[in-house]
Image (cartoon, rainbow, N blue to C red; front, side, top):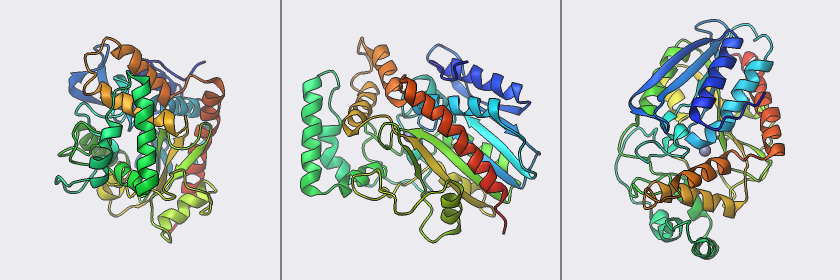
Length: 357
Ligand SMILES: [Zn+2]
């Protein structure tokens, strides 16, 4: 069977069927007032396994960046079909299409062009992101002119070679002053933000320990699996995550600046915020899809499609192209995702079951 769907509706159906085959408890959180690309109902679906109100909850999230969710959805279905008995006291909650509008429309951002993974801020104010202001001229170019795009990329690199690649991390950390730009945090909580908080209360509200994976694609080389652990060095949360996935602190950074960006407003931040008495550890797990220029092009294409390119006759082709950039229809890549993804969930469940104290 193929686990990779071509549409949100297909992915949702695969997930609900796999959850049913596993006798999971399914709870749906429909998104009001909005419909998907084909007029379909949009919903975040949660499949829960193991004891109700477990003390240890493994939380797995798909589709924070909509179009990247096609890979995570396939992983969840594959894991559901292959899973064995859960350890005592551990519950699993699979959160499918946490950002359903963007999953359906094959884009990164919400219906308001907000990057959901920069939207979990505790306070909003417009603050100037100087690096973004400097580099917007290269990031905001048209993908319809291939030579212009290449020139923009070369200028972007030259600028960073001169002024320092730490500026790229400043851009990636999130911004509030370019609503038409990448990594835009928005002006308040998006529907998907508020809804995810509701899901946390409903499915992990009684837990003492939560372990999480938020699956993404794009960071790392094609074929690489990258665990981004944001917990500070020396913390218990970091120690747990490093142990669960056998990670090594000396591994090189996938970012050219040599360090993780100082992300603001990540979705996983909501877990500790909503469950302050709970111990929380986990990682963003990324599957690399391309090289740096490929990523620059696809991010630029997605941004342009949400702004200047909205009415372009090639919109639907470009949307599929973007979705394929996030979830390559490449046989070895998809094989890697289906092999390594479910193993990451198994490691999470095992690690979590051994986490005491
Ligand atoms: Zn992502």
